Length: 379
Figure 1: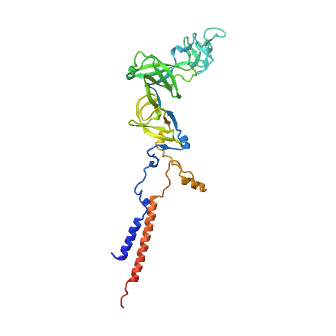
Figure 2: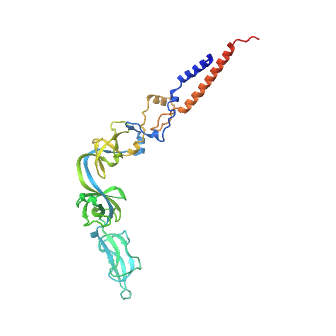
Figure 3: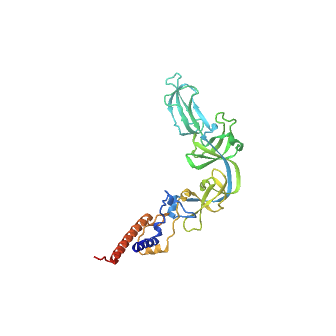
């Protein structure tokens, strides 16, 4: 190898030696979509504003009673002994409807008028009254309808109490009995629980569905529960005392990988620690925590799923505050995002172009110098 080529080669090696490592650090590695949003291990720290945006809600870890339940589905129905029908005792036609479905009527109040077919001028008219105080569920006639004796004209029900009627599967019957406590929920009021007890069980199973009907009496003083509303019934079949429990919504994950987020009370800004837990019994409201939490801690019940994808906010550094005092505006960085870094691909390309220029210049310089030192040939 000639001297100038050797020197050029050594310059290239020297340039590689001083190449910035950052130019090669991420070469060939692309982030998967959403990878930047996966939180690192350890507690998650967020701002108060982020806490409000996520709707973070916490509840106490409690030492209390856990009720084992059996779940059944059904509907709200009227209690037969609190319903009455209005019927005509004479043939004729309807000449007046004195109330409408949904109206409340008192016992003895006129509700419908029928003109008799008996001879008379004018034909005699008879008004029929409500046998009970209650709500008009539906009317079977309209003005001008002809009616026959004993025809059903109207149905009225007292809805101060109602039944939740449910179908129990055969496999549930060994743990269900009359008198057990029941919590009833309806779609119209998902956040309310209506408490009652099993009052009746059917004498036989339905031959088509192989289910047994159960009726739960519910107080309904404000009339929220109406016949034919869909209902879910959770029947309490056993009770466990002095167990550590959290609301069901506090536990996230799948079987074998269940976890909770515990609020760190000593932290000055909202901080949440993710913990793996071992669970035990559960009912329609709570889950027993065998390992992973202790009483009086606070667990996240709303916003815990989103916390899995939040990157902790970085605390401000002293030099950042000094820059702020200098009057320079840097803008607020988005919480959870990393500090901006130079693009590794661009850095590498820029360095390679610069290196190539240096090598070419060096080669030209050495070529010129070699040409000057070459001995002249005799003419």
